[in-house]
Length: 348
Image: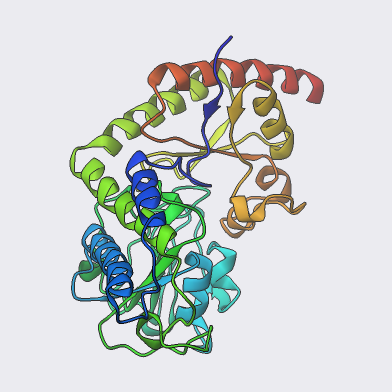
């Protein structure tokens, strides 16, 4: 019997051993980082080491790294009260604070007229499509690209960037906001002076330590070409499915994409049904963003790109990572193709 294959890395990547080790070590450090005694200074050192690790991996040396509970909180910190605009393909964590009125073309590309009043993601979690970020952009959600793409915050020309630990193999429940040094933001969580006065509350030292270690390891993987190999496996899977499943659409093909992401559309075969079928066969995949799971409506991302409700409701996202082999991918292709043929026969 074949082992299960986890093909939902965009929802959450498996915890890296480096992150696990750093978190276990941090558990044994006693003290509060706001205390000035030796124990407090030891905790502070752990946090500042992680801050430097995240900044280096993100190419954000000299910028301020503010630790948060995740990219969702970082989005609130960056976007609240700024009157920003975005496109309907943005993650809900960003669009909740913006007017989602920017135009999107059929390839998932966004037109930006006023960068200083715009929030624009680097890469879409559902389609994998990568945007060209304009100079002077107010906010960018870097969550999906961080660790998978050669990106440096200091080169992007944006004012603020959002990242999350668990998307690159760190723990869940910790993220960060990167912002130009000295830039002021209005704290959304108040009551203390932690995180340079921008985010009150005793720091999640264990999570932060894991985040730093994961970011450092992710940067090494990127430099070593690990994600280039992942892209080759993704392309192999895409070719196999296109050859065996007539009429299947691969959204974002031909556009710059994340190296690990495949968004499939098979009109008439509901995405939720596909997810359940693949789960029973031993494969973890999704019908879109994990934060949108359980919603009945078709993907807002695909609807914004011009797909009708039936097509958008049939989307399946396969997102792989370094732990997935070519054999895993081809095994998935075979199982998916067999299920697709059965579904097509029922739909006729």
